[in-house]
Image 1 (cartoon, rainbow, N blue to C red):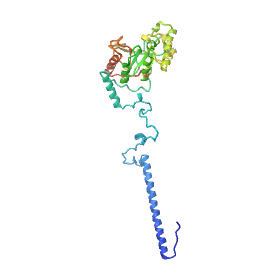
Image 2 (tube, rainbow, N blue to C red):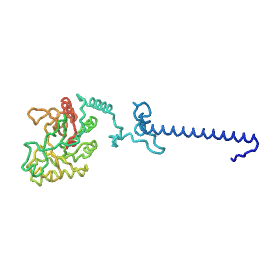
Image 3 (cartoon, one colour):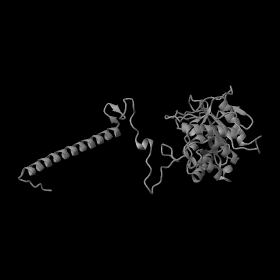
Image 4 (tube, rainbow, N blue to C red):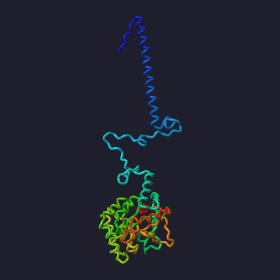
Length: 346
């Protein structure tokens, strides 16, 4: 709006007043702008960790203000899904789509499972798998002629480790006890199965359920023959044929092979290598439903020992597979051992 100047005194007074009012208005606006900029600067400093010399924008002892993503996730935009609470922090999904358990919840679940399956003690939790795998070599006295020169798979009964762990392995697959699957799932006890086709072919699905829980399924030949009595070609048929079955049924050619009865010769290991086998684990102890047997003279369990059992029930044992697991866990737990997964150390 244009200002009209009057020539009389009143007009000059009005003009002077107008100029003073305009100056006051400009100063007021300038102070407002400065205040806004100051507030913006303080807010920016807080968002980046606080005012210089005062981390967190408070006293010098205060820490940085956590971001929303780390401490309080914002609500998802309309029409989008909320964060998936069934995933662990590393992005993997918890078993059965359930939320990951806290340490307290996991311990409470183990206590409840031990009570439910009538264990004397709560099974110990194994340590995390080693970042560097131990070197696996053939046990002294278990070699065949030309073992190292031919690059044959190592035969061993114990994994070299100082950790108080043992490895449970179960052979053949004759008994298919649903209670055993429930027990092992409840207790979260790892084990490795060595399967023979002639006893699993009537129910491949039982072992598929086992595989889904993380259990390793490996090779124990097609028909459980005494291999040293067979020619190289017949041994190769027994071992490689089982590799084919495992690949067809479970989508994997096993890296582990256990000869029936623990008996083998050089042809056995040559045939196993030709089928893709990398390790031949035997055992140092065997557990039954009513007793233990030992390879060592002092009848003691050692760190890294492999323990053998079988898929058997009341038809051949004086009890069930859960009875055998109860005997196994009560002993190893009482002696301070946890049960680890064999594949994690190979």
